[in-house]
Amino acid sequence: MLTKVYTAAIHGIDAFPVTIETLVENGSHFNIVGMADTAVKESQLRIRSAMQSSGLPFPHYRTTINLAPADVKKEGASYDLPIAVGLMSAGELFRCEDLNEYMITGELSLDGSVLPVRGALPMAVKAREMGLKKLIVPEANVTEAAVVNRLEVYGVRNLGEVVGILAGTGEVRPVSVNTRELFAADAGRFDFDFSEVKGQESVKRAFEVACAGAHNILMIGPPGAGKSMMAKRLPSILPPLGMAEALETTKIHSVAGKLTRGSMLMTRRPFRTPHHTVSPVALVGGGASPMPGEISLAHNGVLFLDEFPEFPRQVLEVMRQPIEDWVITVSRAKYTVDYPASFMLVASMNPCPCGYYGHPTKRCTCAPGQVSRYMNRISGPLLDRIDLQVEIEPVEFDAMADRSPGESSASIRERVVAARAVQQARYRNEAGIHSNAQMNSRLLHRYAWPDETGMKKLKERMTRLNMSARAFDRILRVARTIADLDYATRRNADGTPAHTPEEAAGLPVLTAHIAEAIGYRSLDRAAYGQTF
Image 1 (cartoon, rainbow, N blue to C red):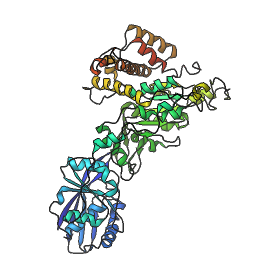
Image 2: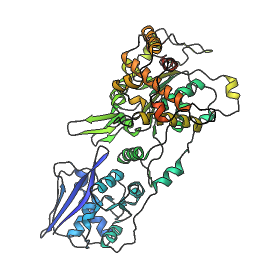
Image 3: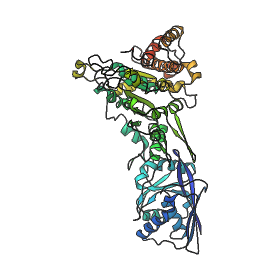
Image 4: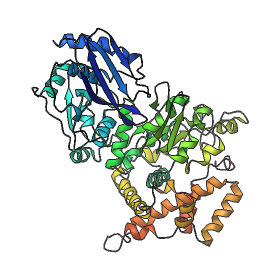
């Protein structure tokens, strides 16, 4: 008897369908074909033990199992459960009239329990795209997969529950998740708030501009100035995740196996902080079994690199392409996968090895030439790709002793959201463009070109500091964001907004906006050393 069971495999962050064809005939051989790796071929032993532990007889036939398409390698233990279902169905251990409406995935333990797998969410998305009506996943993955609507998702703990669902005799019911309630319950809940930050008003402003336009930012300052402390509060002023962003972000973390048991849709933007000993593969992704790296795990969120110059040069340089293209392509001899990588790069560093170059009260102990060698660990092309470069000064005692709270993250976030609304109105007809940081040359000329006075000021500054052409583009992008913040937060006498997002989207970049944007390039290599 021949049966077919649908499951799925992961490629990149998406799933592709795999059909498990099971044929049983008279005989005693058991064969698995279709480019199965060792873990898949070992499934026979796990399935045999799981069925015996569940009180189900293992069919003793000549069995051939084909994993189609046969020209794509199948890896991992997630095929255990669908292979077991196909084997039991072909052996007529149960009858299921609508088996072709199910997608099934799960790893089997020797005692018959079903263990969690990676990528349950993209599998659920693929099942719905294929027109399937039902999905069976391990209980640990059910809330993750159940966020996909128009699909009955069953979470199972053991092989017996699977048989009960398929035979129509079980008590397991499909699980549903109300995503609106999920977002509402988690809205505005953050562990850190900018109201706790004392002083550093100029740095707070730079963070606001960076979040409003999704710009990269570099902080440079002495130890204890508050660089890491403020970076941890950055997610609290970023715009909330949209549904499409949340789904894509959750898919990445699901494929990487980063979701905890019982996790559902990710409702907060990710904040990734890899240590400076991270390898290039761990950062960009890949490996023998391709997995997303830290760059992709930070998609739609923040990648924070503390002690920026301490990262190996090779690690830093691999970020240059994804910073520009918002996608990372991992190409190896046997595969090529694309991982999304639209993230905000937030970096921090000391001004020199000892940390006190230019400090107002402490003397720098670095030898001559050490400061420039320390800065040279970051290449010019990478530094050019960081839109805002901000100096942080130590907080004075009076500011630290002030017990009055600063401006809350909620207030800053309100302005950031208003500026993003302007950008959404401006780029609504531009495919793949959602923020000012993503503007190409055509859009820069159209929306960010300053007037004659602003261009003259920009030329003077760039000539004096010997800035690159890429720095010119970055300044215009940041100036456009500053203008959006300006126009989006203007109010009439009665407190109503002075401009709608559509009106603000077409207003010009002024000289004042250019001047502030230039101020955020004070750490360009030619200027470093003059700024302290």
